[in-house]
Length: 296
Image 1 (cartoon, rainbow, N blue to C red):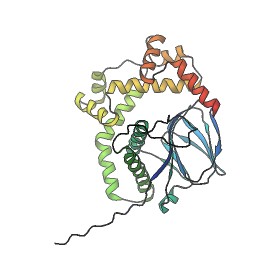
Image 2 (image 1 turned 120 degrees about the horizontal axis):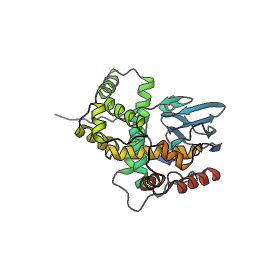
Image 3 (image 1 turned 135 degrees about the horizontal axis):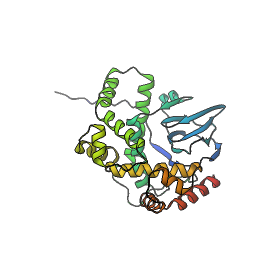
Image 4 (image 1 turned 45 degrees about the vertical axis):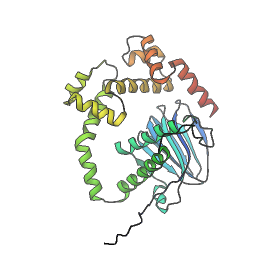
């Protein structure tokens, strides 16, 4: 039997990345704008932003994404809640990219994990700081994880394909797959994440999480290690510090008020936990973000 290969169709091909950013901005941040000859996507991880794209104005909230086409003027201003933003710029000549023009799309949990994978790979692949808006070229580290850049490429292409499918195509197989995922792991994960967010001011244990979400300890830990590469309590501590970072950037509370609001026993314990996770204390963090915003 004579076998014959088939050339794979690739509706989206990305071979060049320009920038990869993860920004944490103060509530008064404003970027006056720019335009360039490549695509740029902006996805809101937390908070909200006001965006201008040519003559159109949009307000984007958590999980919403906008694509700026080549040579489209765009600027960004922080909304009421200090924003965390994923910003990725890239070259792509695929005709299917026209689909993303003048649209605001919403990502789901699968696409959120793909963005997280891109950010994690970029941290280990490039020496550039991902919160630095001024670099003009990504510089590789001396030791790069095997296949890291290919993972960045394929994850970004997957995001484009999944968004295109969900918003453009009536694909019964894809719909069935998504429903199956939602009925199992994704539903359980969403319920636990909601429980953790609702109990942010409290001290909770693994036993309480399992009991109140009707999930076994082994399934809970496996789910968090698979999705977030850490245990559930480590994740809980991280989201508390993430919330503290946003409250600091909102500038409506002082450090003592933030510590009380998030259920820390003392300002000293809050500061210690904050530094364990971020590498800096709350004061250092506030100053670093303030300087970055003023430079911008």
